[in-house]
Length: 382
Image 1: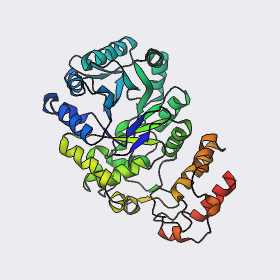
Image 2: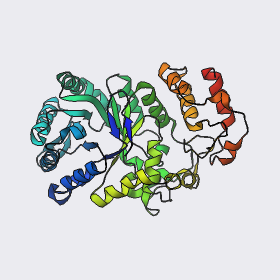
Image 3: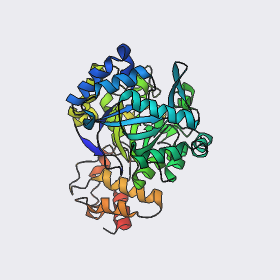
Image 4: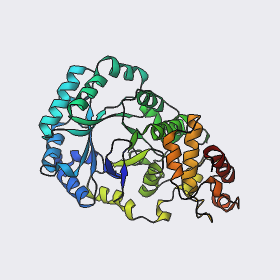
């Protein structure tokens, strides 16, 4: 298992995390099996959005005596009311819900307190105006949560929240199909058939801008819906009309800027094993470029997808990283010190490019790589 820095939190999380879906299986008994399998394979990170007391209790029982082995992403504003899940923006209900989370699971803190499911600007305003964000800050000061997070499907809302300076972790829906979609306050637009009936050219710029903002600000991204609820794994269900493999979906998400971990929605141990197979997958098995290039009605021409097909460079330049850092400066309109430092420690730089063009012959997306290397050398000074 590989581990990644979760933004500026100081936490090192497994790049494969465990989602919450399977915890409900077998009346909560599946939780112990999934946690045991996760621990065995080095998964140290899981998400717990569900307010269901059965699930919370089963999770608490499963990690009893091994709390220090796991990083827990627990949700604020997801409560259990009248026997069902409810998303609330009521401060009293949110406070009570967090107290119940801690009591039922037996936890004395959660590593990430994730403000649950905000897809509208008006909803973010409620989170601020109703004292929800202040409550999260208070919990952090008291040591009951380690870091403040937000889950969203809308890049514009997510950027607004991140610009507040208080959001340290973003849980966001990332996959090649969702990345085509413009911002919407209706999450169902992401998988509605009619939204994929038109022609697309490259990923939505607001989603790209969000990932780059997170990278610049040191906000770590945890990924939900990496497989589009499983639809991307089935050609008949996939909105792209092309099936991807689990490893291709995972690799796509993990190569986006600021992404630290994907949360596997495994419903049983076999599902988790299929996701964990990514760790031993070959480069060819992880390669998503050819599949994306064949997406019907979609052109990624000229857009670097950080897929690595340009390698190997005879000058040993990590072309994808150089391009990623260059794009961060373009989005910022300047060279942030953190980006400059990341660029500096690369073994080779844009100035090392000899303009042989071998990389461009291999690029499936027609990127002008030689120009990017020239631009990087000019931007960073070497």
